[in-house]
Image 1: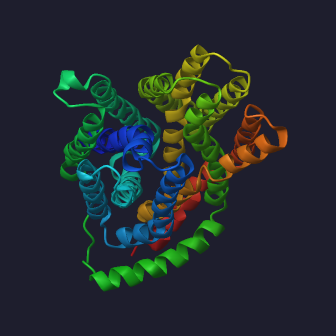
Image 2: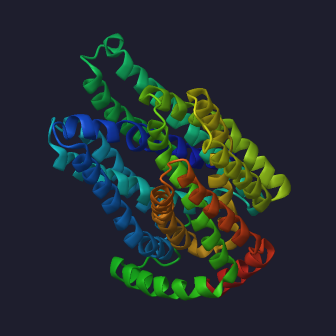
Image 3: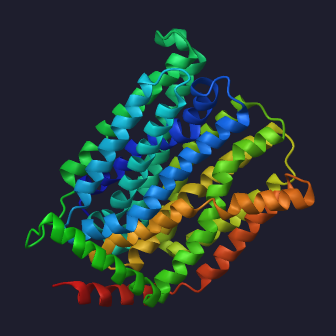
Length: 426
């Protein structure tokens, strides 16, 4: 492998994970409720934030497969990556200028920044086909996630310190510290995205099609791919398994802080737990890359799912904050492994010539994730009148995902991907 290309590709994870950690998971939800929606009922601000996330997700769900098809036909994965990254960077930085109480502008900028983040990931994921040989995809994918955990964690730690001790950073208070953090994320994201544009070359098409031809061809290709996914039984089976267990993973990510608050834990303790997950996730993702290379991606996924099931069952009996810290560390051990091995396994099952399009479907399912899990948690919680028992719904999703994953024949999937790739080449 060309190490410069591999590291340049992986650094994009280091770059955009700052947005995922500092903005999406960390500061935006709290700042939105306490600053941009100050004086508004908590239920109303929660509704506004939920609406913002839903709009961003629905846009990506609608556009990702189509944009992937267009990018594949025009060999334009890097161009689309640049566009979405630029959108995310500019909109994130613009959050600095939003005044207190102006929640409409905050939502608009956040939605556009989230679309930039999610849209960029479609084409970033697809570029793995250009930097890694098939037998090295587990390690390369893991490197990306590992750098993402480390990069996101490093900047988030600095941003948290800025909000706790703003005077030491020359800031007037915690609000200004958060606003400056948005600018820092934008700069970080832009700066560390440069290597992927410079050092990951994308083959040019033999004949440069016009924009209109590319779009109409992309639409035709998208319709064909719907039929192909149904015909590629291994890909179809994997996507069902992935949707189940990644829904469970995302449910834990999104509901963990709410669950901790319901147990009476302090919000500062929960932020510390989030940092623990980030820094443990860095070396753990690398380890899972080696596990995938040595024993196969499916074996690594089974290990991670088993740990998740154990952690979820343990969380049902948790009552001390120190247990929440340990839980965060254990989740950090496997979270990156599930994400990286899923990406590398899927990359082996799809035709390289349609990577962006197929990853469009992959990321579309990722946006649908954490829909069923929270709903099931809510239903079980109401039926049992217990927050703890609501976690049983997450265990069920992990079990279903593991069972369906058993029927994914990786060798057959690789064979069919090669056959289809040969068929679509001119």
